[in-house]
Each structure stands twice: as structure tokens, then as C-alpha cells.
Image (cartoon, rainbow, N blue to C red; front, side):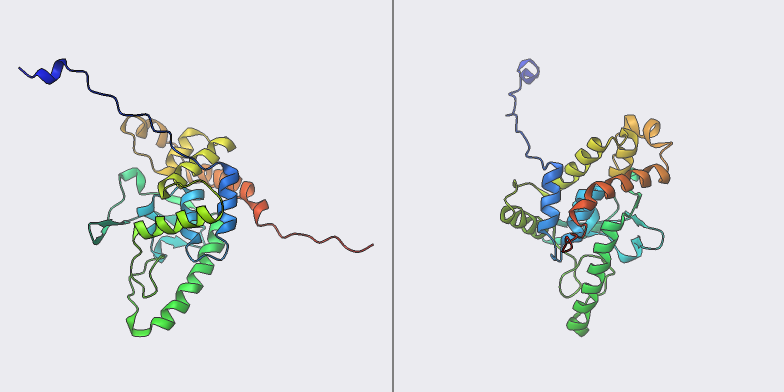
Length: 231
């Protein structure tokens, strides 16, 4: 007989995760002003992308004219090898509305990448990725996370993981009243018991309305300051 069946398994400790509040996200994005990796964190904190989804993003997946970004592949580190793979689940393969705040940051990043390409010359590796090293190679997730945590420390913010930015995105949407059905579509959740009933009727217009509300919520942080006129 299997004696393990009559033994109560020990419970692991309850670990309380540190979360970024909406005000923390604003402070973080302000601290990232001028940072070359700022768009990576914008995609996680405002669009809910997983790290492997953001690092696997290609320029052909970004449609500035339509105002959309398509999640079509992932990029992650396995051992010492960078692996390009399919999204986590069918629901993770999704098209999201690209709010102006994120689109503007990506346009600036594209110009910066063009300058890097000119400097690298023949050493440039053209893989079509949005986020690359100085020679066009893929970025490694642990390095991106360490950079994030250095920025958090400098800004006096709690230490969190890259994935916690995705949780922060969900928290902001909940605070804004985004419906669970739309939020699950934005995040690309793949819960088998909810997929058919919750995702079936989610359309692009509903997600676009949610993105517009998030844009309005974050906009005051970057609004130009009007100086009072004399007299």
C-alpha cells in the first residue's frame, strides 16, 4: 500500500507578493523617461504583455496605421540558448489596441534602433525584432529584469519582477472598471473553463475602449506643463 496516501502534506509558507499600485506605475514610467528599454516596460505595464511576448515582438507585428500590436511569437532563454516559440496558448495569440502613449514610445525606439544599425554596420544581425542588443541580437530576459529592478531601486519603488508589471496592468484595469471578460482577452488568459464563455463575444472595439480609458488615466503624467503668464 502507498503510505503517502494517509499523510497530510506540509503546507508551504504563504508568501505575500509585492505589487505596484497605479501611482507606482506612473512613477516608474516617469523614471524611465529617456531609457532605451522604456517601451518594453510600457508594453508590460499598460498592455499586459508577458516578458517573452514583449521580447519576441517583431516590427511587422506593430501596425502604427491601424493602431494595433499583434502577439504572434515569444522569445525566451532556455539554458544559454535563446528560443523563439509559439505564444503560450491559443488565447495568448492576440491583437491589442496600441494606445498613443505606447505607439509614440515605440516610434522613438524605432528611430534609436535605426541609429544603432548604422553604427553597427556589417555587424548588425537583422532579425526584425523590436527589442535588440546594440548589434541587432535578441535581448535576454534576466538582463531586462535586472535593468528594471535597478530603475525601481533608483526611483525608490518596491522590488518586483517583470511579470509583476503584468499584474499591475490588470490591477489598473480593475480600478478603471474594465470587465473581466475584456481584461482576460487583453491579458491572453487561457483558462479552459472560461475561454469559450468569456472570450467568445469579446471584440476589438471593447478592447479599444478599455485602452482609451487607460490612455486617459496615464496621460496627466506626460501632459505639458503650462507656465503662468505674467500679469
